[in-house]
Image (cartoon, rainbow, N blue to C red; front, top):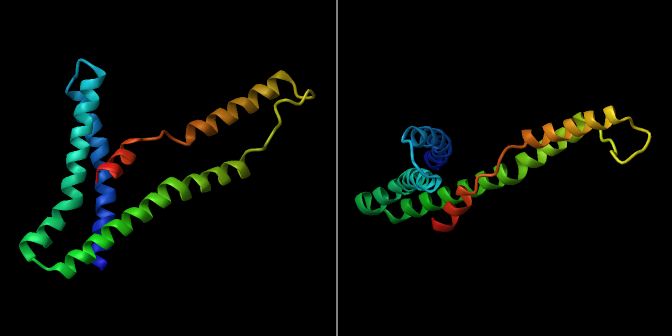
Length: 147
């Protein structure tokens, strides 16, 4: 069981490393169109995810031929992935939102007693907070549907 948990952790770490490497190598390929760029990036990331996530399952199923070990591996893989998704998609954004709410004062920009300079200052602070939240990567959603 410990090996399965470590494997899930390594898959998560290597997926992040692969994402960064795939994006940089795809930029170096110098694609003519944005569609060609995206297709190349998707192919690289998808193949890595499939091989990384399922090669050990194929090994246990076809080489070791141990059904109980295969069952444990599948349960650990999907449970670990579920925990990863809950943490990254729900818990971390919730904590970030609470942190930002406590560290930045809430000002109603529609108040008339604020000067234009104060309104602009608070508007910029709110925009900086939005930028810190990061971008949404839909690749993981598509990968969940396929796998």
